[in-house]
Image (cartoon, rainbow, N blue to C red; front, top):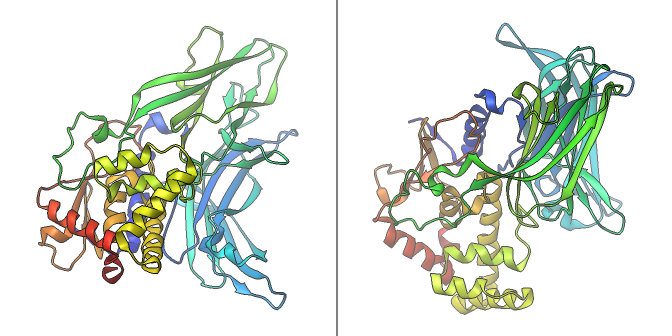
Amino acid sequence: MPRFRPGYIIALLLFIFAVAGCGGSAMENVDIGSQFTFRQGYPELRTFTSGYISDEGATFIRINADVVHGSLIYRKTPEDDFKAGIATDITIYQTADKELQTIQTQRFNFEIREQDPGIANEQSTFSFERSIALPPGLYIVEVRVTDTDSRKTTSRRTNAFVPDPAIRVPDLTQVQLLGVYIADEPYERNITTFDVTGAVDSLKFAFQVLKPDASEPLTVRMELLSFRYDDDLPRTLSMLPLTRGSMSYRGIDYSRYEIVDTQLRRLEAEDSGTIMIEYQLPRPETGNYRFRVSLDKQEDDAGSDAHFRARDFSIKSRNYPAVRSASELAKPLYFLMNRREFDQLMAINDPDSLKSEIDKFWLGNIGNRNKARSVIELYYSRVEEANKQFSNFKEGWMTDMGMVYVLFGPPWYVEQSLEYMAWHYSYNQFDARTTFIFERPRIFGDDYPFNHFILVRQRDYQNLEYERVRDWLTGDILSRN
């Protein structure tokens, strides 16, 4: 198997994600947003692109991008604030004769200035939007951002569909997802990612309907679907393998869902042209969802796949991918506690009492306050990094890869094949105690876009897991990191 440095784990997963997410017809009209990206020292970039039509009938693609503040390098200025710079390149491609042809390029720069030095650790994002006039068609959009201080670059590619307003059959644009926040003054933000934090108060889906025919009515059917998925905490390293038919093995089941909400909007015969429609609902509970819009000629039709668009998303915890609240800090302690301790901790409902018990757990085990502070910082930084690298239908730290990453850290090197990934924590690849094998579930279908790898569990890991938990609880992990 080919070898890769640990910094390439996320690149490997993104490649597999892209291949799996673009291969089948069932997913061609479903947008899933960006996955989180994390490479130490590189800008964290998230993008979403969509086509739209202006009131005058001009066609565009809209590019929304987020760059995590804490992923940039800041310098103190003579004015006593902190400055970071982003150089941005946008390249538009189309496929011709199986080759990518560059259609257009744009370059522009941003400067970020903040007075609070804590900006260097913030998980909030600097967001920007660009609209580019393009004729109807299917495009590949590449966004590259470079930290002007470190000179390190991150790039993302997405697909954008621009419908033809001159077409003589009804059509739909891509669905844009926005988060609505209720603060002193309510505001909206574009959501570029598959993961949606629980901090949003409600969600808004916006799209355009192209209705060229003024001779007959058209019904727009909007549905919110909720999918069954594995939300269990991961099994320990030494437990028996997962049953292949179980939900833990499958991860998520797109064939079984619940219709949470349905709305119909009738466009009358005299309505024609490009019509903007918005659908808003309160934030659903934690889970995996699909907003699906389809066009029906008659109200009792189910809609055809030729005229549907969808946007998948997943509701995660309030501060995701960061961990800030008492509940968010408590749950990852599952890896370090026995079941009775963990159940007792999670039974505490009061946030202040829960935070106090978390502090007692760490200080009671480690003893030294300064040492405990360093261990806590390391542990939860691993949790956040796992969220950014392994997030799928559930939070990244809850996946098998996330569990191994939190306990053992980044692998020394990685070997990868089509079906397996091996993480090595020594240069002896035959040492079973320092090698973890992950396999891709053998799930057949064309609608399976996730980075879902399952640990090949072994009884031999029992002592290894015990020793590593002890390292965390004594603080010895600091000398092994």
